[in-house]
Length: 196
Image (cartoon, rainbow, N blue to C red; front, side, top):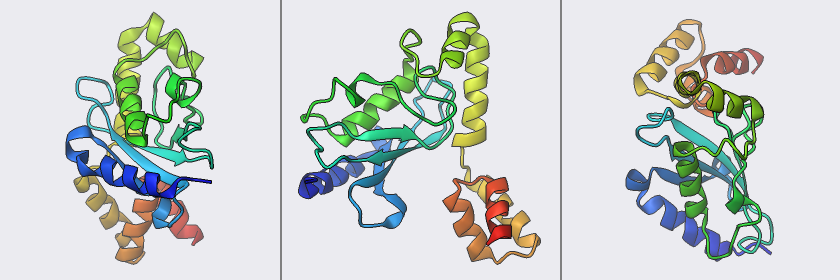
């Protein structure tokens, strides 16, 4: 049975200093289900991920905190230890090195540290790891490009996207909520608006 009071405490704890730590956790899609959460980490300074905000899907098994949380990147990221296909993460504390003394915040901070210090010798994504080892400058530029493309949501950019979609005849509040639901991806928002 999930330890609800512990999870609630962890959420408060994690979000208390999010300006400083760069990590935060929210309930997934505003639901009240504490076993499905959404984490957010800001890309570390002086890394190719700087300036990006990365969304992490967090699922807590009923045995949490005695079992590790299941985490995967929702935001696409170019990194040797994170799958560029599905966001799966290769990190020991999310597997056999997990301890009940750790928290969701320490797990997110570890992911943030992983962005700063990849371990290409223990890769989750062999293609990225090869590039990292063989052509580091190309790895950095690809990682930066992916950060620009998938992890940066600038308010100005959002306003421009809202404007463009409103000009296509969609109601502004619907445009804003749709853009938010797809992390600011204008093409996905347009698809959703058209199919909705």
